[in-house]
Length: 133
Image (cartoon, rainbow, N blue to C red; front, side, top):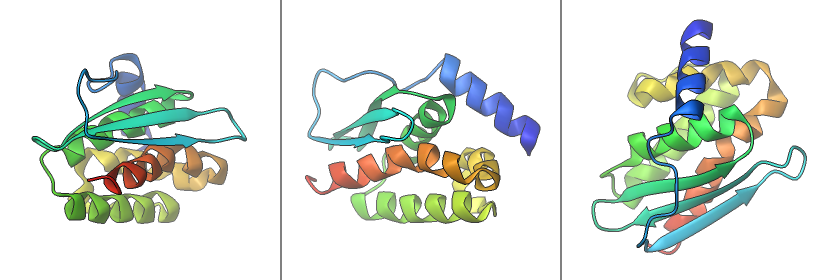
């Protein structure tokens, strides 16, 4: 799991697939971690329930935001909330959840409590964006 974690985090940090503010979006959520300086904005487009992000900070933040965008694409707001709850449970407990797919690569952050906030920050911003949908 550690090797997979490193590989996915590095790949998504170097080559994020959903980075950048889209020309059109219907909802926006923001998050910041005052302890480490991480910042993220999540942009949600109702049509196709598409997500993009602007992540400024550590590799875990960027990887989590990008993998979240993959996992949430096409889901309803209720399904996204369920996904957020499942992800938070997995990264706080360190227990992979088969329903999370590639997101399970981030479960090793459970061994580093200060990094859990990095992994969950985009998800908290998503919850904020979902309030406007």
